[in-house]
Image (cartoon, rainbow, N blue to C red; front, side, top):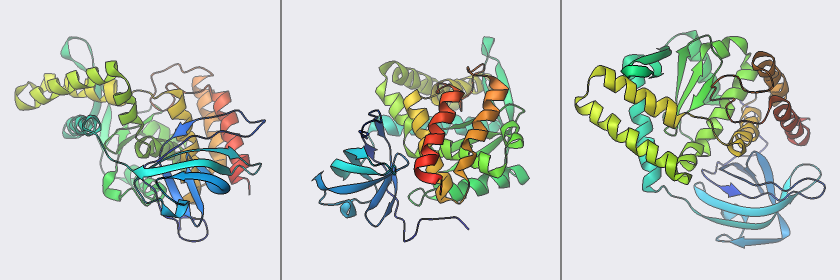
Amino acid sequence: MARRAEGTLRSISVAAFILVAATPLAAQKSEGPADFVKDSVIYVDGQPVVAGPKTAFKGVKSIADIKPGFWVKGEGKRRADGVIVAVKLEARPNGMDKGEADIIKMSDQAEKLWVDKKMMFEPADSGKINKIGDILETGPEVDRVRTIMDRLRPQQIPATALRVRVVRTKDWNASAMANGAIWVYTGLMDAMDDNELAIVLGHELAHFSYEHSRRKMTSSKNTWGQVLAVGGQVAGSVVGGSAGQLAAMGGQLGASALLTGYSREFEDQADRVGLRYVYEAGYDPKKGPALWTKFKEKYGEEDKVSNFFTGDHSRPTERIKNIEQQIRWHYSK
């Protein structure tokens, strides 16, 4: 049975919240969905946020007025118990622009190419491909990962929005596409217990729910241009290209443009939000430091491989320190 906070939790789809920590904590910024609301508490960036006696609201009169799908911006200060007291809070309905819709469409194309060929791959020289691994659609490994993800999924994300796919390979990796496709490698699954795997999946789920892929692509003209160019080639290949061209284009679109590592800001945020998903689902967020100790032992302090899950992230020691702080604030009891 998934653990939930007392009372009824309502999910908020997309939000942005700027957190200004009280001294001696350093100021910090983050954005993404406020995933849960309980009474007068809203959870955004994995953190509990409340209104204070002098909170200035814009667009709403109180936290209770915030509806699922509203875009929220705020400023606040952190109390000693880790709760953020909002100083300013703005909320408005959120939408999707054409650029975001195009990125999702291209993600759909790449996912379909991989699924149709029953393997994940990336382009190599001379139009060839490098096979990463076969895609498993049934079996105990698939059942395990999909069961965990369904527990982690906050209420505002329907089950139909996610497709968790397992890739048969000894490597450790996991990744998320903008369209809700979550990819997990069997090598990683074999090395993790369910609590640790839930932390990995919660991290990837946060990349999707906080729209990191779409925000990354649309914020960079160079990256956006690359995606549009490759997407056009994929569309042409689907209509009349050869199988080899189709495979290469699909791999380029997926691996190179749509699954690459996020900024350190997004990665650290996915850690914080992922822990919140883990906790609310009844898994143990306190396993986070042990999980990252395993990654540190396998890959060292610096990232030695192209790995979507560890890519452009804080060094493992720093990551463990950040997670331990989140545990002290929110999950130590």
